[in-house]
Picture 1 (cartoon, helix red, strand yellow):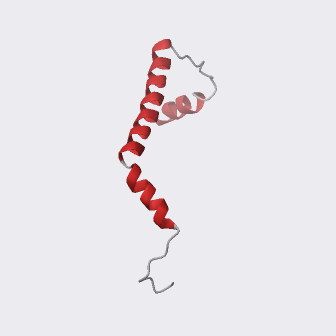
Picture 2 (picture 1 turned 90 degrees about the horizontal axis):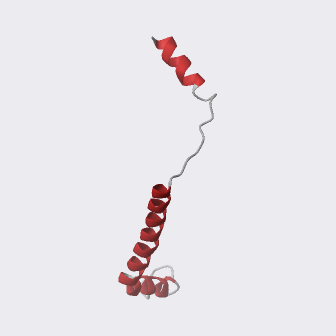
Picture 3 (picture 1 turned 180 degrees about the vertical axis):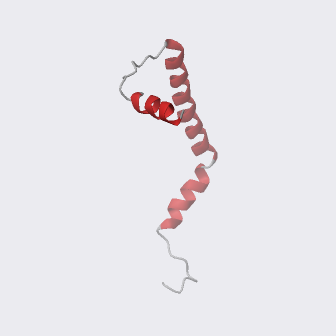
Length: 68
């Protein structure tokens, strides 16, 4: 039984499957991409002030910083 399953696993790489993408799958992938882009844009919109403040304070040193 183990030998039979091993042979079937090893012979599985010999046959090359033909890729098939039906229109429903393509539409789903486009929806996923669009949702990711719009979700990222909304995330930036919501946290824009924090993002801007982070990069503004990135170059400044604090006065109580002992390394200054």
